[in-house]
Length: 319
Image (cartoon, rainbow, N blue to C red; front, side, top):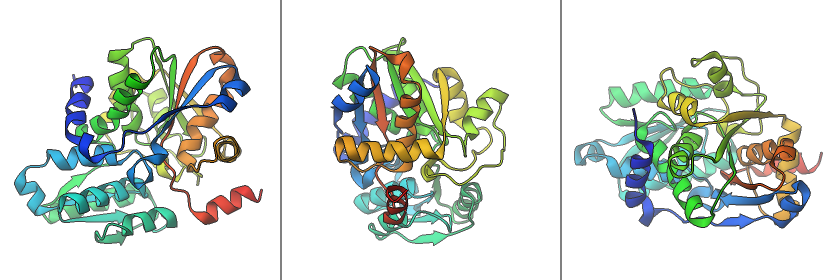
């Protein structure tokens, strides 16, 4: 059995010099609205505008000298690609990033900031991932999965360490779920540190792959629809390590509509003058949807990223 807490603590020692210790901000407006004590973990303020740098750096810093020399490959809808590119640039490691052809323009622009070769392939994240894996194998490079990698998961779990340092007696943590890297890393640490804390996985109704897979008892393929939560859209590779970790540590799953995601983005702009992307809004929307059962409780919502395109933001604000 994987000892996630141990791996997260190791990750913390590696990545600390390379990441931002993000604020845990109390939200008076959300607290008043929901009759709970609501705190926002602001990974939207992390380097590259998303939590992904934690896992990317932990993986890159774990590579052998030969692996570094041969270079790495990543596939991503955007945030993971930017995080890996940022790490490659910082650590002077060669690499190649693949993104789907329909990736967010804001996220593609973010990747391009770090001068790492970028290639578009397919329109489905899973197809992009499979191609990138094959490319890495053919070129003797190391493939870095956005979620199916112990070092990546452990790196994301460092958020759990920070939250536990910033707040005592947390009743529930709401985190968005795509491939499960973020939530399984946080949950794996928090559940060992604070077993009574509920870990709630939050997904868009249009792409609920992991939640449906948990129900089925195995990773399944389902038809997904476009979603504002582009960072979590699409399927999962078979035998992903995050599936078993989510089975073990995540207490419940909440699905939210596209309208609820939109309202959460607008709400954060109004209440906190902060920008968040669709994936962040999924976690907030899931809490608001279920706020009644958390009255009087201490709640943490992970704002996972801020990388929303101007076009998407304009379309939301005009509605």
